[in-house]
Image (cartoon, rainbow, N blue to C red; front, side):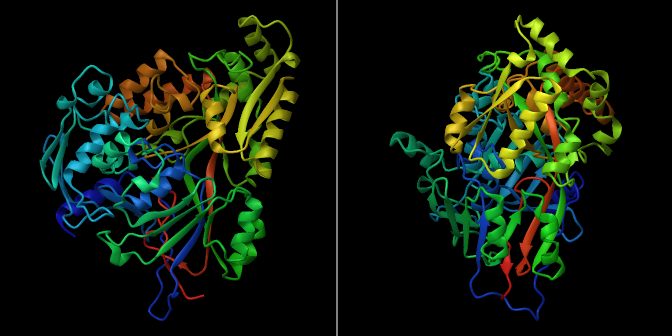
Length: 567
């Protein structure tokens, strides 16, 4: 490994959380299966445009069919290891501002066309194109001129991304950013084929979601897709590291019911599963004990929470009440998070009284160790939630009692688990406050998204998986104008924005930590969101699966180096 590679690993590993180790590779005495076909579940994708990626299921698939400068695995000593992938090497200037990347000359797209530095330059500039308004654009704002261009105040040519030659490009920051390498390793910074995007636009093609218009530079390519049903990946024969990719085909199936997922695992029709219905942890212990399943439990940098409709261009949800912070706070405090954890997480997750999960660090200090979770104090302060809710009703001029209020939440493709959770929501709000809850059910994600975008909800359940190890990956979601603000309920507060802005530019870890603490407190006090729990992922694989990684950040699992034993 050359000096530059060692430098890359030391920078990234030092900042990342511990995770589960790689599943051990087979020993010399073990035989591999003749057929290397992997069977998995997945949630269907809303898009396959790397710059426009938003959700964990999109990150998962796009990480396997596309590739950026780095690829992340989990190592035997339980750390995330980012290795050079599309990049062969890189340098950083002495002032910490200019990053120069040298690409592997052997990298090709699935149509045989070489991957060039221009593909990366095109991608990074498209990511911050103000007309595109991509959700992850702000991750590039540290590059000099990027934010100004995105805000319509600067020119595209003033963005400090430079093409040097076919295999070399650079980016210059406005000020040093210790997290820059972690950001640009993410899917939104993967290279693109601008020629194909332009051709799709000219011909009226759906570049966002039509896999047949795309080419791929990752370990696999999308070979087939049935919307809301299945996707088939096959090995990319043009991939630069194809000799280390043993799986020839990956069958992805949409299986919403956890009971059906369980049956498929037990009958070996699935090879790996992130367990959603935690009740199976106890039931499957016998399979772990007899060696049928391998079991991995991993603390996830994620939070599940409730998003309220506070958008300026909406009207406070169907109830017209969600813009009032006392009403939102009363709803947030009404949910018994300890009971939720026992009923729906088998006691294996962590009840959440804050937005930022455990394990997120600033410098060498964990944020949760440095301060109490704000909702714990608010819970002690507001013991009469009905009275708090009624104060909010008076402030908005509502004439009536909580019993006269009906809120609306929205769900899609309901499972037994999600149905039970929403029934629990309904009972909690009725018991603690007296109000009613209407659960609107949509048959699929597309109709649900349309309802969400039309603000046909008072609140809905949302989840966020941290992109990198810094609290800002959670706190920045609620800043005014953030690319994800429209999915987070539209919370907007000038004091909160100022704290996050100051923290983003601060080079002092102690100052940044305090700013994060102060900002989170504002978000919780004003009912900007209602965190419910921090996840503890439960993973199961068949005993014949080897070489699987479960990185803490990025794709939930990396299967490009999986190899199946004979079974």
